[in-house]
Length: 223
Image (cartoon, rainbow, N blue to C red):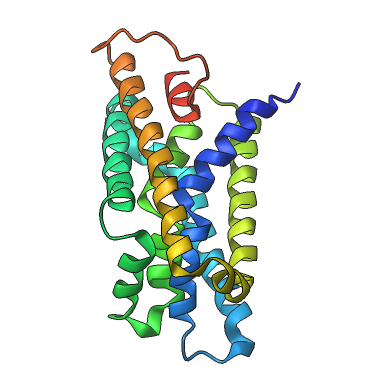
């Protein structure tokens, strides 16, 4: 039987860490000066590269972790800390779109790769979330394939938003994109705290009662 609640939580988690809406201003800057006829190809290329990076990380990320002899609980805590710091930059610091637009100003020729594909779409937070959501020791191949499918779905949503970037930007403006990015930062910070607590519970540092509704990052890593 399909657990739609769990699938929804995973989808929301991936949507938050990839942040398709926050990527729109980055895309608009990256295609500035690019002929309008090439915008579609530009978006396809950026999302394709991001998908390749994230899927490779899905397949080999945990293998790399185990090769280095690191415990998943430790990785979960480290990942949670990184996710939390990333969330803080989204909430209090310079907004994600503005930060990445400034990065684009330093490298015009690789706009589809940097910063659009990485780190705007294939962000560090997305890479860490993918490893936690597809633990080889607790998830079957079918379950990991479902997570991969959700990742592809989020990337397809990202692609659609990029193809509609001009219209969306006229509706919400740069301020609207910044507000949405900060709201997503708050959600991401909550996910990060749950991930840290789950990692401490795995390592026996804390004995934490399970939440009423499980965080997919914590539940997957904890088995």
